[in-house]
Image (cartoon, rainbow, N blue to C red):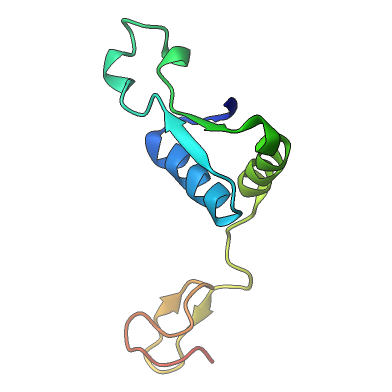
Length: 103
């Protein structure tokens, strides 16, 4: 197995693992439960890591970079509901306040 990613949190390590498995790359998360010994052990040795088989390492690293470089911000601009006047973020297709569709 080869380490391809070191995460800041167990949640991020599991997210990366899940994305890799969606691409049919088996991955393991290691060190996910070592946060409690950080300080007694160097923190870099207690951070969660994602490991894959060496055969898939190059592709897995590319996928990780795509995930880290992706822009998850919604496209478009915030909008104001014509029915109730409430401001909504661009990611909302309906008004959060009155449930009328975006204009």
